[in-house]
Image (cartoon, rainbow, N blue to C red; front, side, top):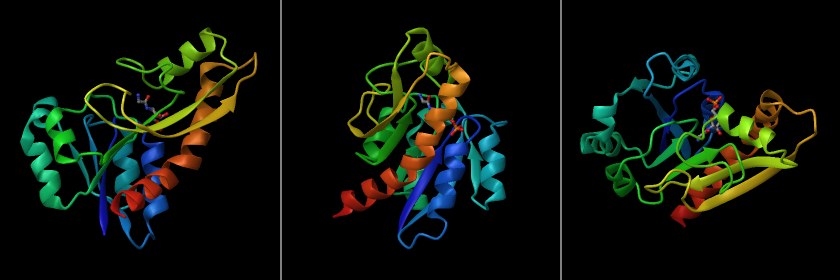
Amino acid sequence: MYNIAILASGSGSNAENIIRYFQSHTDIRVLEVLSNKSDAYVLERSSKLNVPVRVFNKEEFHSPEFSNRLLKEGITHVVLAGFLWLVPQHLIAAFPNRIVNIHPALLPKYGGKGMYGAKVHESVVAAGEKETGITIHLVNEEYDKGLPLLQATCGLEPGDTADSVAAKVHELEYQHFPRTIENWIIKNQS
Ligand code: GAR
C-alpha cells in the first residue's frame, strides 16, 4: 500500500477531490492531511471524509523531526495541493522524487515565490493571455522548478476575469490531478 500525506494551506477542493478518488483504491490511500493554517477549510473537508488532520507551525516544518514523523507513519508520497510554503531540504531528502505539486498556470510562466492562487490568475488576465492551464510537477528546493509531469491547457476569452479563469483552472485540476498522482506513484515503483 502507498500512503499519501496531503499538505494544503487553503480551501482544499483539490485535497477533497484526491481523497475521494483514492477512497476505494486498492493500492493507494490518503493517510493524512496536514496544514500550516489552523483555520484552513481543508481541515473540515478532510475530517468530514474521515481523513486524520494535523496543523503544524513553521518551526515544526523546518525541523527534520517533521520528515521523520511522516516516515514513521508510513507515508510514501507527499502531495502539495494549494500549499504555500517552500519545502525544506530535509523533506526533499526524505522523499526524493516523492513530492508532487500542482501549480495553476503553465510553468515556467507565472510561477515562483508569491505566485499563488488568485495572484496567478490576475497576472494571466492582465497580460492578455489567450490560454492558461495547470502544471503538475515534482518538487525541488526552488518554487515551481521541479520536473513537470503533466501540463494541461484551457482557452481564455476577452471577457475572462481572475475568477472565471480560476474556475476553468480548477476544472482542469479536478480532471487531471488524481490520475496524474496515481500514474506517478505506480510508475515510480515499477
Ligand atoms: C489551486 O488552484 C492550486 O493550483 C493553487 O492553489 C489552489 C488551491 O485550491 N496552488 C498554487 O497556487 C501553488 N503555487 P484548493 O485549496 O481549492 O485546492
